Image (tube, rainbow, N blue to C red; front, side):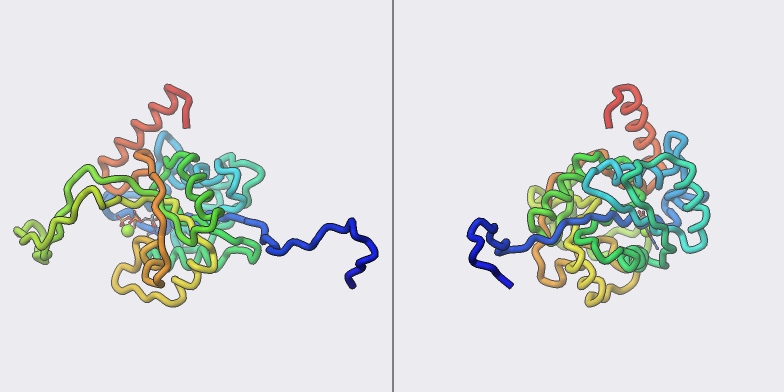
Length: 261
Ligand code: CTP
Ligand code: MG
């Protein structure tokens, strides 16, 4: 009971703040068809280290991230656990491994389902973006902690973009429908950051057909929630096609030469 005979007692906080706990979910269950034949993309080596390990380290490098959930290929969870045991990660970072699904959306959902209750905000980061700098991760976390329910890092486009009427046959000419003004366009990267409850609500209520959502923020937009863009980084590019591996190796070589992350 409140005792007003002790006036020195501090007033109870008017707006009790829930402590922030940020986790990163790394969807890594894709096959990497566009990279060509070989092991699942996340397990292929870059500079001698699997892409997934680079991606986990990139998240763990942020002091804000205390848990990383890796969503492994559905038949590869044991192999992923072994890899994580073999490679050094900061002690302060907890790691969980869960099996993924047939689409990226299902894989992200599996990662969200594994989050402990005390996690308040979540980063979703593609294993296929192994070289994202920690400053980009921190910028996303900070914007979420300041109250934005959804934050994406993005860059202006170099190429002009055309909207076409797809021909349906590879290589066939396609009529242009529109040319959006390039200065208003941004190419979106990861990690994308979310208030956990908002992203879970999006996954529970938004149905996406076909391949599923390739972009978590797009699902949150469909809830009518405003998504904010913060500056991305050119080293946060996605390894998709063979030429991207050449670029990733070059970025790693440059880092080794200059000792900069
Ligand atoms: N991903 C996933 N589960 C899936 C499909 C994709 O966890 N069923 C992950 C990938 O492992 C990757 C990220 O989502 O880290 C982005 O997907 P993408 O770059 O398309 O990778 P893949 O699907 O592996 O590549 P591809 O589309 O060429 O097969
Ligand atoms: Mg894919």
